[in-house]
Length: 607
Ligand SMILES: *[C@@H]1O[C@H](CO)[C@@H](O)[C@H](O)[C@H]1NC(C)=O
Ligand SMILES: *[C@@H]1O[C@H](CO)[C@@H](O)[C@H](O)[C@H]1NC(C)=O
Ligand SMILES: *[C@@H]1O[C@H](CO)[C@@H](O)[C@H](O)[C@H]1NC(C)=O
Ligand SMILES: *[C@@H]1O[C@H](CO)[C@@H](O)[C@H](O)[C@H]1NC(C)=O
Image (cartoon, rainbow, N blue to C red):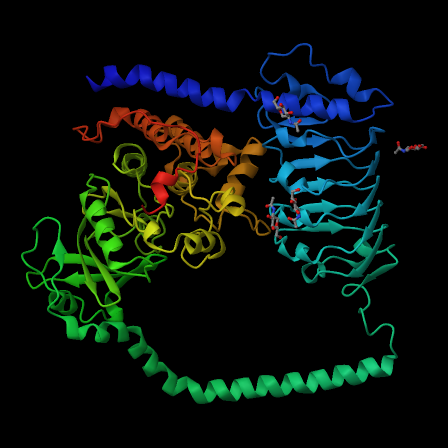
């Protein structure tokens, strides 16, 4: 019966997905605009870039200098227009090549300024080569926002002014060259690592790897004296710091322990406060019971620490377990918190960790959850070698489908709809049967919203790094498509067995994230190499590739091209159909109400 309902739907979904992947009129428009804006005295583009034969998917991929993501898709991966004798200003229309990662205009006769908003036009570039032209003016500060840049080559132009100090933000640069321009001023620190020849031929540049900036003008003696004084001062400071730490070290340890559950001591006086339970699995509980069950929230009972707070294991007198979360400072008043809890307490789904109750004691907010005996998906995937029972494919597929179902429920069915904003393999917990349950939903909005967005992006310590959708860097606004991206990273972890931020099978010098690694493999037609070797050759290779493709579609850099969680769930479910994982379909999901990555204020703004 359910098959009748789902089969046609699935077909439609696949069509929607492929339509968004295959046809990008924008990319065609992009090339048309470039074609019109550059002067092409040798007629090279004119002879190759023919827009007459339009309509065939991928026809632009045969144009001189155009590389596509896939030969049958009109989606530009990079433009290599080096050494074609082109003239005129910086080409127009680039912002319509929305998935472009490489731009090479080297060895032409381009002139004029680089647009100030270049980072908005082509935000995802990894390689920009404008060398050997006659570009002039200042190097735009905005290039420092193009955080994916690996290569930036500006040599042999007529740039003036300074190298923007904000270039220190370009953390991924592996190649940088500004030789033979008219630049002056100090060289930003993180560019010190490049050879001095890459800065040569500019009258006014100074600082490492070239000569120092102020000292060069003064006498060498002065420099030596200053150097010596600075050296002595530094040595003294280091000495003082070392002595300070040695003296502090031993006695410092104990007070810190006390510090850790000082908060617990502070609520001791309020022990008789009741824990409000939504249902009644545990008869009347008081704060004192929670204190006893967690041994006054001692360190040994900490299960995990995340952005929303610290989770403790609680052992009840009858030997059963609960999980208690101490919420990180909440910005909300007691009434707001209570009403929020009321809402969250009603969210119930097979693939969500149930919130059983909560408790307010002075400034502290404690949440009581069901305990999940198998821990997090992250821990299961990254076990120590000791336990070599690697998760098999059917288990991983079942977990992927279940987790997708839980998140789809939050996005599309549950009322009010909930954005998670923190999806990672660490917040997907497993019960005794390895049924996945999403935890921490609904907590992000209990924090200060502004702080939440920023720390999501800046902070790596919570394990969120590697899960953050690229658009968050610019917009700082949570959207359903941002959750889809993070979920796509979880799917990639399931299929590759790799961690989101460190890829063990990648070459030594590859420092990117899992998504960047997959993008790299995909660009080089090596996608099949991404799959966890322990899964291959066991009769499900077809499913593995289908699963990988769904994961990739979730992590597309353009939010609009990602599927919705509803679609993700349907696609995964189709892959796992033959296994009949869940007998009953406990989820009558409505089709998505709206599909795009709109900001959905109604979801995230309290009241
Ligand atoms: C640039 O233009 C000049 C003449 O304006 C020409 O001599 C030179 O060959 C051109 N350079 C390139 C690389 O086409
Ligand atoms: C991008 O494409 C749209 C639709 O074809 C067009 O209206 C717009 O002018 C283009 N933008 C640029 C900068 O060329
Ligand atoms: C970057 O580009 C935008 C859009 O053109 C502009 O408003 C802004 O001033 C530019 N500079 C910086 C530092 O963001
Ligand atoms: C670029 O970065 C500057 C700060 O360095 C910021 O003010 C600006 O909004 C950013 N622009 C874009 C397009 O991200």
